[in-house]
Image: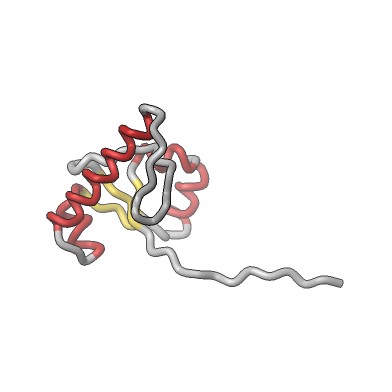
Length: 100
């Protein structure tokens, strides 16, 4: 999961700070080149991906519903290449309840 300050605000800063600062689930990296290095991908490919995502953000803001390659239709926050990114690895978890 990659977030920036704007998406952290949308998530809710108290919750984000809990998961980031107390639980330590997020790593803070500066700028897109460090983000690419951290997640192990090519900087140019990541830059292109973020630019494509930002194009979808503009479409969404204009009221045009478009889907990305994963079927996502909501794009609330754009990403700047020179900002701070917060990165977390998301893994599956099993949650269950016990009935009486």
